Image 1: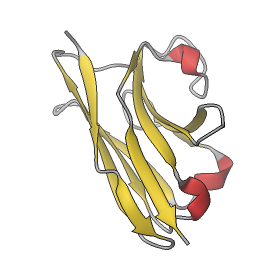
Image 2 (image 1 turned 60 degrees about the horizontal axis):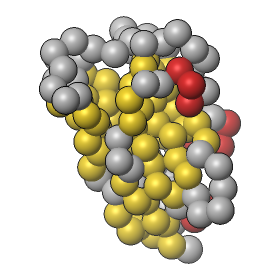
Image 3 (image 1 turned 90 degrees about the vertical axis):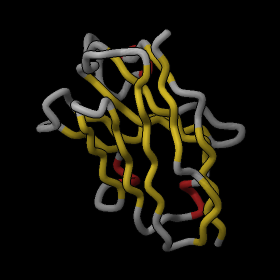
Image 4 (image 1 turned 180 degrees about the vertical axis):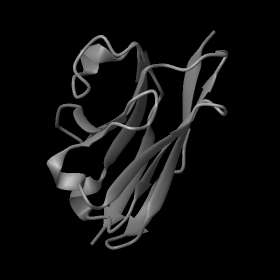
Length: 124
């Protein structure tokens, strides 16, 4: 069974950094689109970042541009999210997602497979 497993979440202070990782198991070929979404308490799940199969195209939501960096290693079937200058408003459960790329990168509908989520808490 194919699954995505996230790691790297935790409790940090504002201004600190965290690196989230996501590994795909049970699969030997890469997904076209890999992304990160987040969901804060009482809010809908929102797009954070996505990366194309080649890694050439990367997209970010405006609130994380310049602070977060998404990367992927197709040989290792992993995708990472480097988060710098974290803010309290970044507090959420972060989800890794993988998809065939048939939809729009910022839409959850473009992704067929989701991880279980990892909690990121940023204190002020």
